[in-house]
Length: 163
Image (cartoon, rainbow, N blue to C red):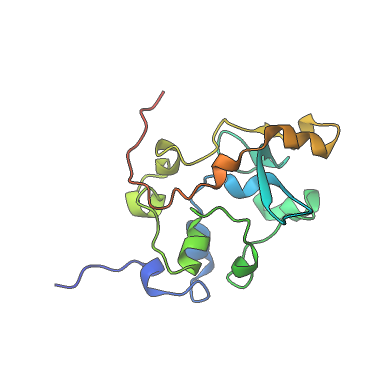
């Protein structure tokens, strides 16, 4: 008997339907954090500061369909630009699939639990501050968080206890 293959295991990113593509988002919130690029090294420096439209508890955009109106530089992730977005978290499903890897064990499509990313401790739920709290954008550098770029994609799924 052949094991069942899921759409992300049989289709390329380009072949996916819009609902399939959207379902790949694990809701970690890492892509909604403010980042800086070191002018000398080109290194991307992530912070624990989130976009003004990010809901820090739900770990999703407060106005996803209209986000470009409020945040014009918000980048729409597509199968055609994922290769150019090296700042995407290494655990990101889009990045992992683009790199030929499978989804993490803790991904909601794998577990069937929409909160599994949070239970695995991979999301930034309730760990960030809004960019609106700062008068100067550079102040976000006081909240650098290089630990957030650690690849958690191959971590086993061991849910943290609920509070």
